[in-house]
Length: 178
Image (tube, rainbow, N blue to C red; front, side, top):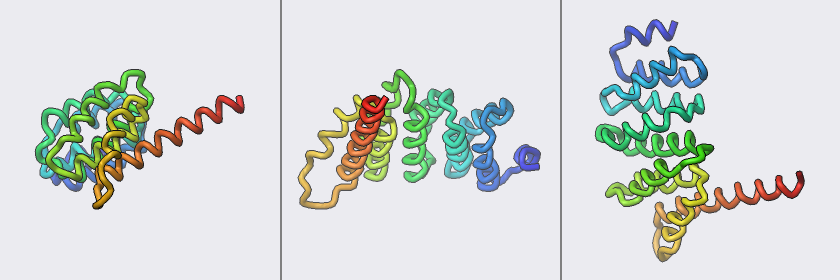
């Protein structure tokens, strides 16, 4: 019923709500194709593209990484800061198991210089989500800032480093047990 409704729905917020439910339908070729179509679509505040990114993350569809990166690189205007930060984390999550995480790491590293602080924070968090050892070299200088005042970017970098170190400790413990 929702699939048919999505074909007719004109309100982008209603369509976005429907699209988010598709995250529970991994492996469905029609859904996958529709998500990529909606990822490329334009809507008010990019609600439809944001919903497609969220559904792709829920499906853990790593094949979507290039398409998401392309959309974020060339057409991020119109997304709210919150939506972009979520998209950063989604693309990092999807790429976390890729052998070549460099394109995502480079993109996120570029975002650390964004004029909007919430996007810098989102990029620092996403670098932690990426689970790329090379991200540590990018995050560590961010933690070296003076702690005289609250710095959300530094705090996000510290949390990302701590999460990465915890992952490394768990993998070491697993190797020692095995």
